[in-house]
Length: 374
Image 1 (cartoon, rainbow, N blue to C red):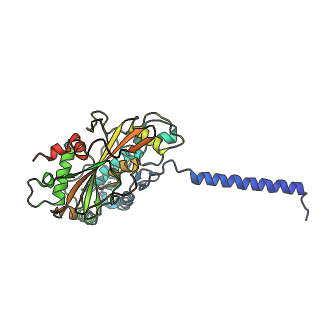
Image 2: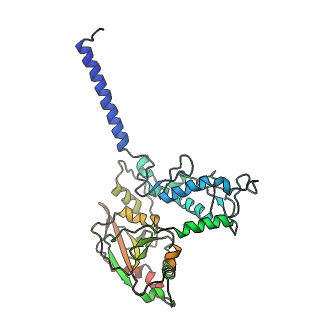
Image 3: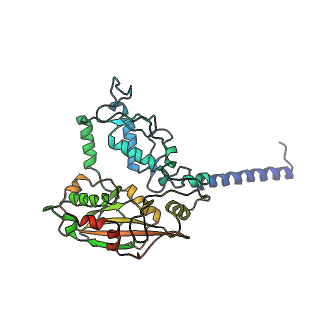
């Protein structure tokens, strides 16, 4: 066996060590850098089809997997008006992308379209940060999963008993997601008079009170409301809105959360939120209505603006039937918690306390005026 000269041996050893070090650095960099489509906390890829990276709650991904598994049982065996993929009565095409003909309930198709529109808001790294700038908003989501140009088959008026029974079982077992408890520090609050919520009702229920609040909110443009569970009750959360200096809902760009053409590399959450929301001095508001007989304080940890923005997306669209049917207790109190954020050179920050009290906020938003009507 021949021996290598010491110099040659050292050269080979140096090369091997250098290669190992470079490989280690590459592996570390790969682990440190998030996937371009990585989701923010609380969301996962939907995976309705191979390569589907729209970020959704875990329950939605499970729903997509169930729908895929049951797809063949929901199609007409002999085809129909819409070809071989024609759905049975009670089902429509999901349309997670243009050629997605998996048959689902109409509610699932609506949720799928909504998830596609909101895809860009649920990513850890928004398109502006990935691509070096650009708009993030309704148009940006089109690249995630383009909506089908041709509408899917209409839903029949009466679903088959089997499908109806299965949906009813899922509905009865549904549980509301839990709101952070005790709630994060707020800007201001207001305890609402019970009479405003139960007017004209001799035996009010949680559902009837929630419906009255939803009507008051809808009358003032709050079209997206989500529900959460709180101890011995529930909470309703509004979508984030831009407000004017007098605390009234903004007359222009009230719901606008589009990024201006800015470069956000390296990605910075504060810079992203500032670009997402607006310019210095702009104010935004989220209102949380807590319905519970249980007294509460606040936690010691302020809510990050990005988390408050996501509340409406992570909540449920309605109260579960069992909770809605329960009597609205005589000792139940509705407290409106107002979270006001202001944009500055340092980013978005909670205004605490607000320059306005809770009554002024709800009056300026038009909510109190609507509740004061029969």
